[in-house]
Amino acid sequence: MSTILVTGGAGYIGSHTVLELLNAGQRVVVVDNLDNSSAESLRRVERITGKTVDFHLLDLLDRAGLDLVFKRHQIDAVIHFAGLKAVGESVQQPLRYYHNNLGATLNLLGAMTDAGCKTLVFSSSATVYGDPERIPIVEDQALRTTNPYGATKLMIEGICRDLAIADPAWRIVLLRYFNPVGAHISGEIGEDPRGVPSNLMPYLMQVAVGKLPKLTIFGNDWPTEDGTGVRDYIHVVDLALGHLAALAKAPTLPGCTAINLGTGTGTSVLAMLHAASRMVGRLLLYLFSQRRAGDIGICYSDATRAKQLLGWAATRGIDDMCADHWRWQSRNPDGYATSTR
Image 1 (tube, helix red, strand yellow):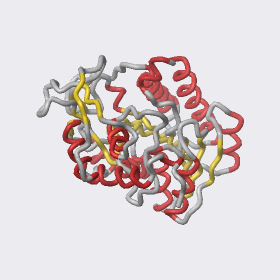
Image 2 (cartoon, helix red, strand yellow; image 1 turned 90 degrees about the horizontal axis):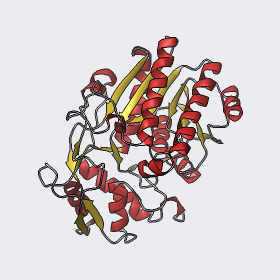
Image 3 (cartoon, one colour; image 1 turned 90 degrees about the vertical axis):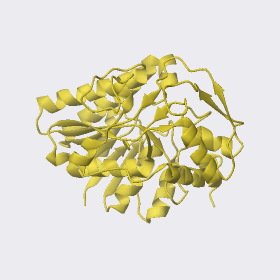
Image 4 (cartoon, one colour; image 1 turned 30 degrees about the vertical axis):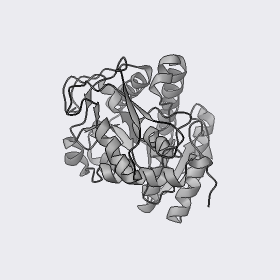
């Protein structure tokens, strides 16, 4: 049994990963400042698994507090989710994003170094590919970003590479994932965005529960089968299991390795809307609008490297994604603010 530190472990992807770690028999320590998450997610994870999480309410910018966490626990490896993550907000508040995301990661890497913990799985993103030079996206193609959020991910990847070159004892896996959707099959934990969702699935589900009137689809003239944008949607449980696979295989990989986590299949906005409508039991209302500046038409992964290096592949399809997300949203229309039963 290993002890895994999960930063940002109360968030959407973090909480699902914590659950899978506990189910796999690992000890889990979570550090989260709850800036964009809820401690209720971890209480529900404990209820589902019957196991406990050692939770520290802490901002990674607090280096002294972080050092105390490493002194209190014998941490074997770290999964780093913590960070600000809204693309639009990053454009409006670039200094906040650079200060938070880079400063927090530098503190974490410094604390890990001092503690002699040199295994890291980093939550990167397909945003590091920017407007991709080719589809499907492979890990060795050009990296470029179109917003400060993506730039922080790309900079952190560079920091990790430099660290692994300077000290060959490091084992770092950079997981670049695509569009996480869905929820745990229990319906107890799921995505709980603050304010109006910026991503497709939580927006659709808020339309389904009556919190929003209809979905706006930006562009129906993209060079795709139905004219709407195509993305690589991946079930959050598949994504969580990808992190466990990365932890298991990290010792066998060279210093710093980038790996896509996606299905390798593109799904259009309309196809996802119709799948969600089937799960909800009625057609969800939508309207078309003009393309947004900066949007791209098609973006999906080549998932070959994950299968080759991690022995991992996504297994859940869009019907599973929609059914599980709807189960979560219908039982928790106000997310974690919904009264617990």
